[in-house]
Length: 251
Image (cartoon, rainbow, N blue to C red):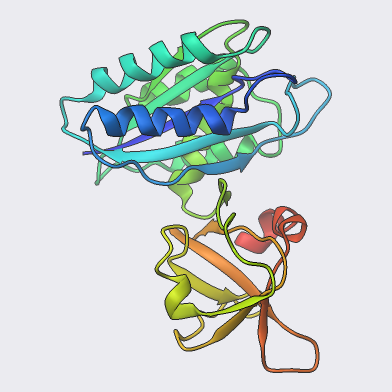
């Protein structure tokens, strides 16, 4: 069975980030032989003065294949780790969703989209989670992190939102790589032209001239590239522009 796991609001300005804690959870789940979890995606939520957040107001989500009876084991392990690692002053929340193939998740996906543009509350989160048998739990502070945790699951379910955490850190700047070789990396399923969004053939060569990231687009980990001015060659987008893509680009 496929489970979606998302956490939010686990840090303060001096602590390790929520993304690091998500990576720790992945490792713990892997060590329990539940299987190898997916990569983590970072989902940007609404920035507003009435929403407390540390730096970016983003939640971290990943998936794992496990036995249908592993639901409570996953919750127990994640909950224990959040209680041990969440920072003072944070409002941690956990969401675990057992995915059902024939379920219509439109309301959950809409909740995720709404969390990118409006202020939601815990009552709304609990009501939405109840429709889908999703686990929500608060692990300190106000527990408002459950809102972002549920929203992150909805956005990951939608299949087109978020950056792949810590992706492509080991690229050698100034190098060139064929798409065929790039696709050997776990964080790249396909390479697409940024402007046309078309999938580029495997023999296309990409210039790695700056740091970049992959994003979650059409249920794949995608590297977006652009043509170099005045040539037929491609180069990667820098991380700053990746973060500025915005919702309209992903539609």
